Amino acid sequence: MWACPVCSAKISARRSKDLEQLINWNADRGGTVALLTLTMRHHRGHSLRELRRALSAAWTPHTVAGWKRWKTDLDMDYVRGVEGTHTDLNGWHLHIHALLIFPTDVSAEIPALTCEVYTRWAAGLAKKGMSATAEHGIDVRVGNGAVEKMGKYISKLAFETAGGRWKRGKRGSRTPFQILADAIDTGNERDVALWQEWEQGSHGMQQLVWSNGLKQRCGVTEVKDEEIAEEDGGGELAGVLPARSWKKIYPVAEDLIIATRHGGVPAARAWLDARGLAFEFEADTTERAVQLDPGDAPFAWLKAALAAEDPEQRRERRRSYYRPATAL
Image (tube, rainbow, N blue to C red; front, side, top):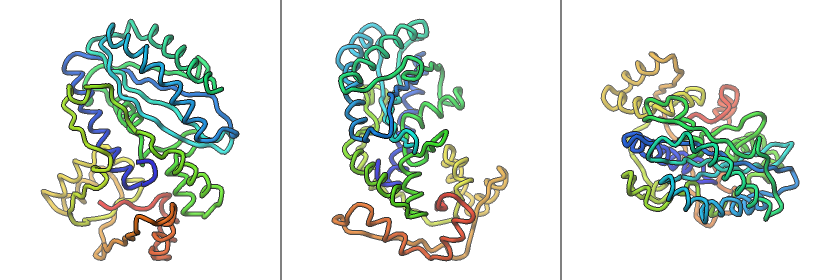
């Protein structure tokens, strides 16, 4: 999930669908969803491992005491996600996104809940020598309704919590996969070192944690990340989408796939043309792939993939797009 862009994309797409199913289920029963974001103060001197230990310590009090009381009083459930970014100025930044699920409208209870969550969060951070501010350390946003009625808000709920390959940093920050892309494109030693730190520091970290019994109640099937990563939907390569188009298509990619299945390449062309999106359909769509043994050292697959890519095609891609084209 954290170290492979391909696996991350597949896993995050599935997890986002799971979250959409959860939110729709909660909407059907008249419930409320809140997006909780928790952050901590940090600087360049903090290692990724230090931040991860502090995050774990600060979250534990919620699962022990606070969560149990809110479960009893408000019948609350949650799904917790972790996200990491990096800036040259302040170093690594780890924070939590959590979906708080309530069966009724609890808008009136949110201010008190926010205050208690922040108190517990700050106390947990202090145990590891870290801190947070009330102004920037916590954010809670409430929404009601099903996915199709919540627009951009639901996209934020699902994609912020699920994270993954398609996340982009803001205000000068970079996600780990942006650092990876820069390391591949430039060979910058600092970026390579940052990526290796992320590979090692994120090992064993869970992407999403659901409260006990929530998946079963909302009808989400339990599937391990490894199983999702190994899935192969099969199919044939019909065309190539540049990054600028894929970014817009990704949330509704299923519609394009359905159009292509029913009408072939002409239907895909028409679907993309109607939305003013760029695409490529070439006679020769041979894909390059590199199969490495499990024993290969970290980062070795990047060098092998780079060596296998046609230099002229890579130069052309660099000139045209920030990221590699994605096969449809």
